[in-house]
Image (cartoon, rainbow, N blue to C red; front, side, top):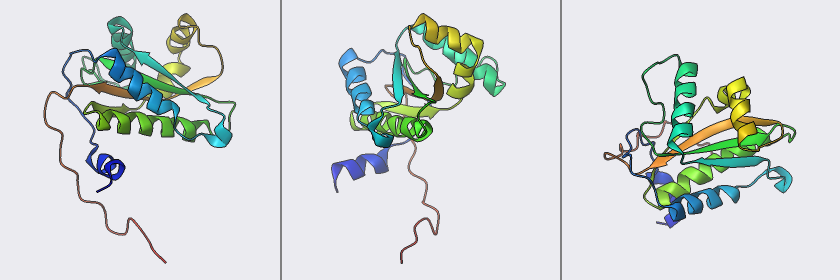
Length: 173
C-alpha cells in the first residue's frame, strides 16, 4: 500500500502522552509539513505557534479546560508540545486553510511515530482577552482566529484500532 495512504489509515487520536519532550528536529519537521498545506489562492492565512514552554502550555490547558466546563482536567492529555493553529480572518478561506494545516500536522506526526490529537476550543481561547494578551506577548499582530491545537508527543499507551467506516460513506455514479 502507498505510504501516504497507509499513514492516513493508521492515524488515531492519542489520549495519553508521555511527558518527555520531543527533539526540536521532530517538532520542526512536523511544523514545516504544516506550512505545505494547501491554502486558498496560496494566501497562506494560517500561522503555527509551537508551544514547548511548560508554563504557557499549562496556561493554555487551564484556559481550554475552563471553556469545556471542567476543572482539574488536562484537555491536552499530558502532551509536552502543543501546536496552535490560528488563521487570518481577513482571508475568506481561513477556516479551511487552518483545518488543512491541522491535517498536515497530524499526518506528519503520525508518519514520524509521534502521537497526536486535534483539540478544539482554540477559537474561544484566542477570542478571550487572555488569549489576545498571549498573542501580543508573542509579538503576533493581526486578526487571527484559533482553529485548533495539535497536541503531540510520545504515546503513553497503544492507540486504538480504527472503527469501521459507516455505510454509504462514498457514492459512485
